[in-house]
Length: 329
Image (cartoon, rainbow, N blue to C red):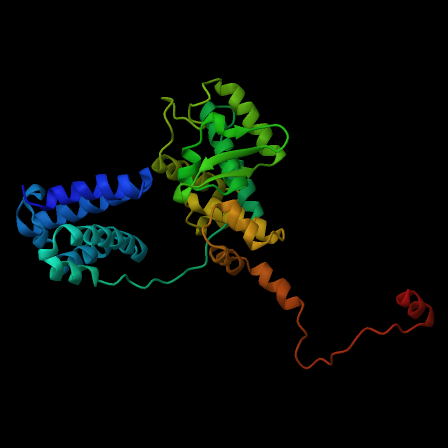
C-alpha cells in the first residue's frame, strides 16, 4: 500500500471529522469526490486505487478529471468547483505530511475554480403552489405524508437535508408553533409555521403515533426519506399539477425551488433581508439578494415610484380652497 491511502484515511479521520467536525453531508460529499477521482485515476494508470501514489494525482490528471466531470458526467460548473474544493482540501493536508511532494502539491493547488454564471432563481407563483399542493391524494397515507411535507417546505423554506432530517420531536405546536432543525454549518435554528401548517402537522403526528425520535416524514418502511425520494415525489406531483396549471410545464422543479418560493414570498411581504437570512439559515445577508433579483414585481414597484421622463415634476396643489384647508390640517 502506498502512502496515499493512509494520508487519505488520516485526512477524513483527523482533519474532517476530528478537527473540523464536518457534518455528515460534508463527509459524504468529500467521500464521493475521492471515489470518483480514484476510479478515474485507476482507469488512467491501470493500477487499482490501493496502489495509487500521490504523484499519480498530479495537476494534469486532476485537470483531466475535472474535464471528465463536465464532459462525460454532465456535471455543472458549480459541481466541478465543489469537487475541486475537496481535492484542494486534501492536498493542503498532504502538504504537511509529505513536504517532499511540495512542487506537485503546489501545482494542484494552483488549479483555479471555473467562473460560473448566476441565473435567476426559479420559484413558484401562487397558482402553481395551489396546483402542486392539490396533487397529492390525501385519501392515502403516502398522499397525506407528501402533502404535509410540501406544505411545510413551502412554509418554512428548509433545505431538503433539513426536512428529511426532522424528527417528530422537532415539531412544536400550540402558541408560537415552529420546527427546530440543525442546518448547514451545524447551526440550530427555529422556524415559525402558519396556523394551517400547524393544523396539518398536528393531524399527521396523531396519525403517525410513533416515538418522538422517529422521522417526521418516514418511508413505508419507517426510515427517513432520502434526497432522491424527495426529488422523485416532487417531479411526480409537478407533472400532475401541470395538467391544471400549464405554466408548470416550462419549469424544472427541484427541492430547492420550494425554498426559493418561500423566500420570494417573504420578500414580497416586505420582510427585510436580515430576517430572511436568519429564517433561511444563510451565513450572509448578501445571499438573500438573489430573491430581490428573482421577483420582477419588486422592481416594478420601485419603477412606479420614479418620475417618468419628459414629465414636469412638482408637488400636488389642491384646486379648491376647501380642499386646501383640509390638506393643511
